[in-house]
Amino acid sequence: MTNFFFNLPRQFIYLIIALAVFIPIILGMEMDVIPAPEAEAVFNIIEDLPDGSVILFGQDYDPSSEPELTPMTTAFLRHCFLKKHLVVSVNVFTVDGVGLGQMAFSKMEDEFGVVSGEDYVYLGFRPGVANSIRAINSDITNYYKTDANGVPSASMPIFEKVKNGKDVDFMLSIAAGATPEAWILYGASESGYPMAAGCTAVSFASYFPFYNSGQMKGILGGLKGAADYEELLVRNYPEMKEKSMFAKKGMVSQSWVHILLLVLIILGNISFIRERAITRRGGKA
Amino acid sequence: MQFLKRNIPVLIAFVMGIAMVCQYYIPSQASQDFGSDMNIWTEIIFAFALLIGVQSLIHNHTNKIRRKQVGYGFSWAVIISMIAMTIAGLIGGGVDNTKGMYFWMFQYLQVPMQATVFSILCFYIATAAYRAFRAKTPEATMLLIAAAIAMLGRVPVGTELTDWIPLGTFWANLRMEIMTDWLLNIPNTAGFRAVMFGVGLGIISTSLRIIFGIERTYMGGGD
Image (cartoon, rainbow over all chains, first blue to last red; front, side):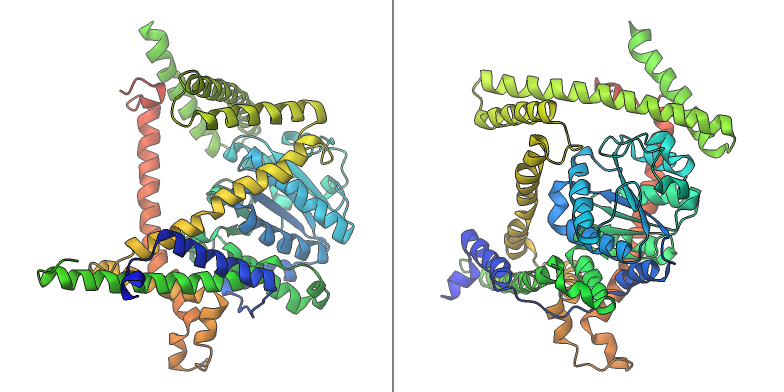
């Protein structure tokens, strides 16, 4: 039995991880979430802006990161539309992600009755990260002649209020890659809008230098960042309790997987120490 | 031939490199217009690069199929998928038509498949953590302890482990979420900042090497 724990077969590890992921989701388990300060900072900015402010939203991810980043997008857009902010959205990361942006805004149309061209506009993708961001700084409709549905942008009512980056009150880039850095370099530094980033858990730590220097006002990191945002939404808007909150549900699975990983690391290290002790004694590991 | 293959590309890289650096720092309208024109040129180049990419992909996979190389069945999958998505896009419109066949295939085939492949990482990380995350040296042990704290501090079950420690006291520093915040804000920020300075200097030196024609690997040929 001891030997089994010290030489766990790969398939056994896959099985217990799968159980840790699926059982909480199937049973619909939930846990209380303590929002992180960097997520609370993003929420407070949106909350404190006067109704009808202009939000620039970089939906900079593709289907690979959809499970981790779509809950964050949904929570953020819900908050924007609850506050009746105007949302101008683009994807500067990849053409693959445009469909996801369409799906997110279609969901918002169903939930809040927002109208494309009036309450929001989704401009889709054009190649070149720096080019697209710098074009937004100078003249949005001159560069994005149509939205992602092919509708001409110049005649849209939303662009009577939003001409370029100078009119933006806050920017959030939810990204699978390094586009938030490009938004700082070419967008926020030129147009002067405050900004924050949403990212996958693996890139979360890399944005802290920007957060601590004030170049980013907040960070939403991975599914936990989305769960934090959902928690803050529910606390401030109790009617949101009725909506599907996927990230909070996912936190139970993530909790158990993290605990399992720790147990596996401890077992692996005990096994390593044991083998080293046996080798030193001259025995066979 | 040498002139066309080597000197002209180096000259273009030099002129455009210097022009774009100057354009960034000149706030006049003429400079802005020049920048906008260059944006359009970049898109045209992207479009040609895409064509070359598609041609290269088809060439590579048809070769594999013709030679019946190991795993050539996957090459069939690539080509059939590419043709199917192209036809669906041409007949029913692209992502601009959310009721079309292309969008349906994107939503119900591409998104779940790509998300699944990425999600499988979780299983590999678990086995890798068990087999490779060993406290072999003092540095590895520190990394292991920091990772364990961060893993617990970022999930509700971890924060619940230490939520009995009262806030506002010295002992509150031992709460999981507070230790995690400290790790992310102090040692992690310092480390990443150092890495970013290094990367920044590397980007500047590589850019200068390309602009001045010292770095020519982008032209192929390995020199």
